[in-house]
Length: 337
Image (cartoon, rainbow, N blue to C red; front, side):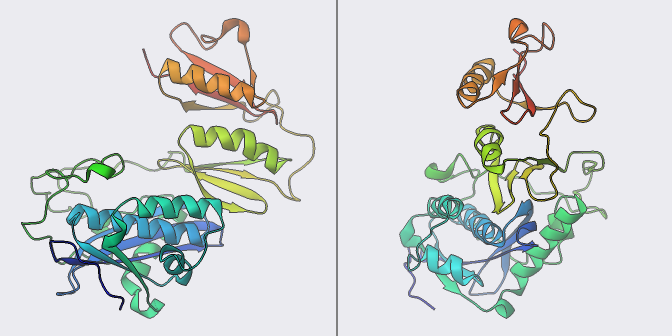
């Protein structure tokens, strides 16, 4: 194992992570855990489905989740990341170049979680990464079923806890990462899970009927990527997979897909024909809607119902209706004033 760069606390944490994609790209997910190397105890676990994504995106996402968990447990600990992805280990160790733009972004995100001197990387065989592999498969199973991964139902259990001396996220957040660490963990004890996996007294939200993903078929994929794909990213979606005939964009839960290929018929999209007319997105404040509308028009979008903008949907509904160059309509809805 590589020599550790140990901070003043002298504590060492292991991060074990894995990611997978059934189809590559296909239904993807990641799993990660933090382990105490002295006792072997599992201190925390996480897994999440990623919609449609590549295997490499899933591997990087698992590592990022593990680093964040380690930082929450002890922001001053030395962290040793153990992965069965030779690619990610070599790229994060600086021995291999990162050529793909999406991987560059994910690597930069990972490097920003903890100071470089606190983190080392090691490749391990898949047989030694069974716990993280189990979690990533649970995430992919959840994604395929259109459900969320539930920690209490996982086949891998947390068997240890951080010592009392370790700062908690609620009392000592890392200043450089306060924007992405999520809400502070509550100090009070979490109730024991009920039989359905939810904490006692908590009803899990119903998933049936909620949007899982939207797939948009296009004739010109590059044009769609530079128009609709650009807009999706401006709205907060992140590229989660890219292949020769498509791109997927992951949101907070649902994901969007732009796809072309030999099965796509000719003729383009006509929003006025029977079928889907448009998709509406929350787009922030009125000022943010106006700014995004201006930027979209500079990229070839057409403002619809200009004579009634921004109240084409009603006097209390502030929104912009835009038609993309391929004819697809989107609505940008402002938060209530």
